Image (spheres, one colour):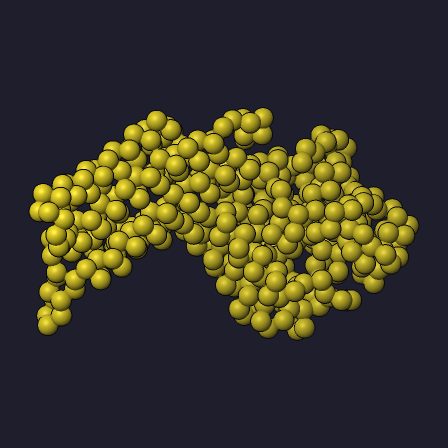
Length: 389
């Protein structure tokens, strides 16, 4: 979503999403306005309303906040609309349920003025007041999700889902945020990391909210987790695929000459069938990983995976088709050799199960390579959107 150029007279825009927060929206707006006035900063308060049916809009307008209406429901959708309407050089965002203290705007602005591009609030390096956060979220949900995000994307943050943050207008443009749901919080950290933005955390206090919570622990937690996995095809597809493929291929080649005896046990053709299937499964996951990376890049999500960039640079449809056809051809020749000797012996008993299984493996891998090459090339067809990414 393109944003309008900010006017220089507005230095700070405070953006709050709102859905039926009449009990707290007034307090949040007043704190933000008083903070801007105390700091002598030219700023504005924007309330991104997401379909409130209570008095939230009237309260916000009465206090002088600018209300932006977003009919598309969703945490991210509200923020996208609010930030698009903002005019400030610096943007401070936070929930309007009074769980975050907008009187502490200065601690977010100071790092931005010193060159930081994204300032994250951290409730865990600060203080979580009693009753502010369910124990499940405090000791399991948030730490686990933050740990997974750090593992997958090397973000190095302590509270990836804190709702109070600040960033520069230029940083927002670089992050290219798109998601409309709760994934917005994860997407911001992920895209900021992939764009190599300078990120800093500041400790904050998290207060008990007033009113009904809009969160659903398991649903929203799963949405964050699945979003992180979908934006990390390397860990979801490529690494598991590579491991399964190598294990299966080594096992297949080891059993190709004959049974393998380890101690008192012999591993024969049944195990070879199993490892061949592992090889095929791993190769399929590997191909899915490349397709997912290509799709992610075409959708505008930034990617920094070295392997993917290498393949994107040197891969061509023709090379993939040739490689697939050669692999398929080798398997076909092996099957032809088996058929020739079978016919030569009068179509009698056939004892070439291992060779036939290996030939089948090569033929399937070859066919997968050919058709996946076409599919990857289809995903890579330039469009107006991809050319601008």
